[in-house]
Length: 554
Ligand code: MAN
Image 1 (cartoon, rainbow, N blue to C red):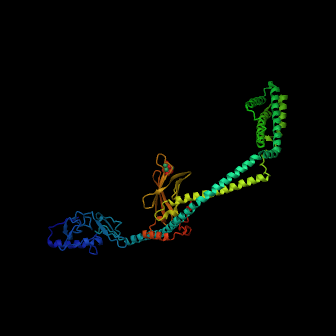
Image 2: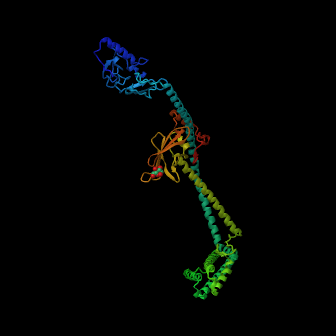
Image 3: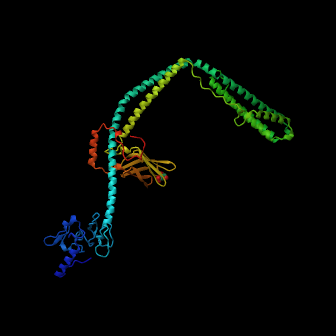
């Protein structure tokens, strides 16, 4: 940095002043580092003096950019680092002009912002002018962004058109449904009254014909009741034979042999007898019970006897396999013979006799009675009419609720987001699959699914950030929540998911819905749309969103 001396001989001072001025102006004769728009601020007065821009001081114009800081605001040194506080303008021809802090002038570093290299002019560092290259790249990037925005804006216009037509159509539909409420309710209460009457009439008839029907059923079930009774009788006889065999074995076997197999069977039989004694008696036959219940009771009783037979057979079979044949104990041999004869008839795996099929209660025979038929048909018809009316009434009510829910949703001032409502998008990272149904729920899943929150509203008023709150509680932390930040893109998709704070998720979504569309254009379209009130939403096909899964078509 030079010292500004007042003692120079006049000629030398003049020569230096000319040299400094030349060296410190650019091609347009504007002091170095000054932008063309600020050039008018750097003009000497009639006495070749100049005032600092903050008005604090007047100095010879030749002191501008003389590498000595005169002004408090640094405005006299826009092209040197002497003050370091001002801004140095780089023209960057071929790219975009910019400015850097004057402290970075001639600091030996090629500043990126000055792609023309004009910030390093003292010859110490050579900074090539790369503005053409940088400019071309920047223009390419700008073009790319511009074309995304143009396409996005085109698609968003489609969203808006759809949203507005959809609102009109939903409003009309709501009117229509509301107009149907009274009628469907009336039809339903008529149908209910008719059904009640038909049921009452049928009940009265059935009560009157009860004994007749019971007699018919009794007749129908008689053969299987007889058969089941026979089976119970036979099973009981077999059980009693096995019991008697074991009782004889117990009393008559030769106790001196101490045959462990025989002893085991006898003591097992004793336990069986004790257990039998503890069992409560089965209900005695009731002459008043229906034939169906009588049959069921017989089946139950038979299966108790069959289970007993199974237990007794296991005892005898155990002895048969392990008894000592050398003892030739008469009582044991008799029991073994009975067992062998019995085994031919017994299927141990089914706990029943070989080849015996279980009996099944037959369906009640259709009533062969025109009067009964008439009551049944009338009840069936009334039931059908009631179901029908009830379904219609629920449909109308659900339809109203659903449309009101949709109409109450904030799809943005121009209805842009209606088309995206209930559309779901997934994003996979290395650990989880995240999914979000717009205006619905967000989830995180791996082996199980965790609720991250439900749509709770927009953040701010720019309609590009949504909040989903009230998700599953975080261990030792808050309830999970999602902030969904949108940016312009030609396709609606989640481009990233992060968890910047524990259990607070940040989803980034690209979508045409937030691509800039000129305000006035949006309003114009709105006006045009209002004139097309009658246009149906089916006529407006959503564009460019074929890939999205829609949960619930609007
Ligand atoms: C799960 C996931 C994570 C979360 C932890 C918090 O592992 O939901 O995203 O950070 O729980 O315990």
